[in-house]
Image 1 (cartoon, chains in turn blue, red, cyan):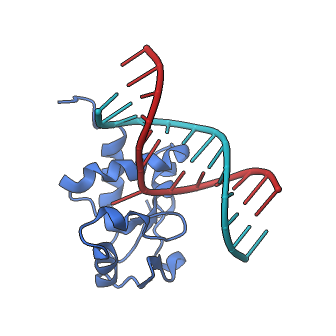
Image 2 (cartoon, rainbow, N blue to C red):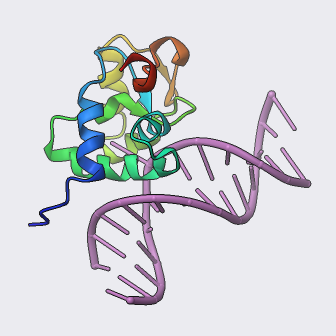
Length: 109
DNA sequence: CATATGACGCCGG
DNA sequence: ACCGGCGCCATAT
């Protein structure tokens, strides 16, 4: 359909797919990497379409390390389970050692 | 074409 | 340091 629907969304997917295992990143970090630091919201919005993609949206959280998007996953704590399954400690929707598992595309990529 | 929504982020009090 | 409100950009309707 939309021939140009792969403008921002696709970019986000490309970066999100590159998130290493056991690591997480923030919407703003991805947005900034894409040159749209002010479009952090769009990153999350794009995640809505990532449902059909191979994008590990569970590895993307807000700048506080909070699983704000866990509500969009199946169940109630699937996102947390996925992260914990990767070795990421999560407590009360809050990632522990966030700075340790944080993966900045602008620096790492 | 205009309006409303949103998985955020930053500034101010 | 904590809480609240405003702003921004892109997509969907």
